[in-house]
Length: 271
View 1 (cartoon, rainbow, N blue to C red):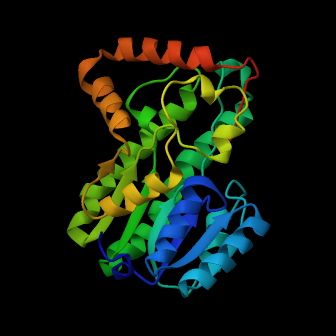
View 2 (view 1 turned 45 degrees about the vertical axis):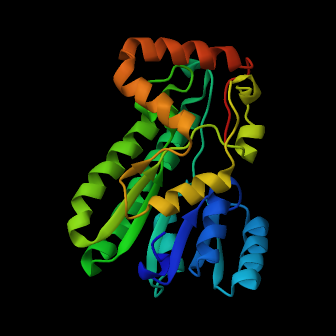
């Protein structure tokens, strides 16, 4: 794995209070990178920050912030002003499962904002610095379902497809400036969001759920080497089948059957 400290002294991780984001923070701190932990739950962030500083001797900052609030990126910029930010991990996200018209429009717009517009804002805000100084790295979290339209997760899958496209394009644009961009597309991962999901029962979906530590580890090991990585062989094979073997119409029908069987009848869920 590349020496992550070469990108800069500090890394920003959004959605750091649990799940994949927490694991990114843990592994970055273990690699000697100071971390800025961003999420809404202040108590969790402060506990994690204290733990990481004690365990690894790094500076850990907790930034309790609602990233859906107006001016959130401006506030984050103010909080990290003067720090040598070398890595940004855009991990924060939510989703809603169920028939599209049964979900509140406001909820679906929040998915668009947090899962799509926020990574765009982070890329633009910190990418300018990275490109200007010819040093830095951006990690975007997409999903293994980004390769196909997915009924009952229609908006979420579409937004994740946008994130994948954005990241792959920026990887090409910025590599001449020595800035690394990686998109990681995990499949179902054992997180609080998955356990507490409303509208869908993930236990009804076949296959083991991935350890979030493995997702973060796979991403960081491939940073600077690839534009896109899908953790897990089964997820990779499913992606290849969806892109190259199945007609798009067949892929949509397949996802419709799979996700449809796991719906609980209560529309809406978040992670």
